[in-house]
Image 1 (cartoon, helix red, strand yellow):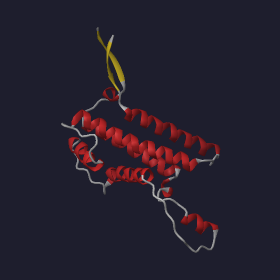
Image 2 (cartoon, rainbow, N blue to C red):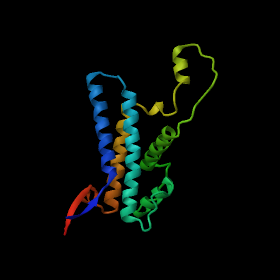
Image 3 (cartoon, rainbow, N blue to C red):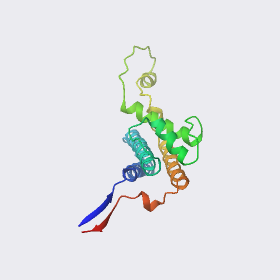
Image 4 (cartoon, one colour):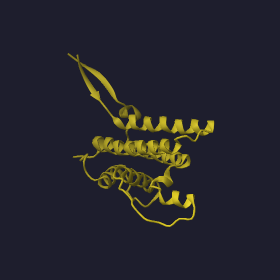
Length: 176
């Protein structure tokens, strides 16, 4: 039997972020801080990947001659234009999405840091040992970023007139 199969990974990635956010919430409720920064990092990476997959989904569905391997900024401009908005990485929701993309890039392309420094305390030493993304690894930042990605998804679907049913991975029999 022949089937038409549609696989849309943005849903799986957003579901992964949801699961990770729930893990963080449970740990907070239980007073468990063990590994919570790693949970935050995992959730933020899943959110970044879900945005990329979401942009590719909307672009594939709505932008003529969509180029999946184009630069992220170009893809955002095209998808936002189809949605009736100009993309500006310095303003509002677009700024939050852009910051998430930059966080993803800094993690994905992590570079060694080697310095010599004078410190007076362990706290000062810890500060010098931080990665650039460490400031983002808080449950509060995860919550606000999660909500921003959800809002961006709603904005794109509503503006581009894409129903939720059209976004789901599915298989339909086409006979034979």
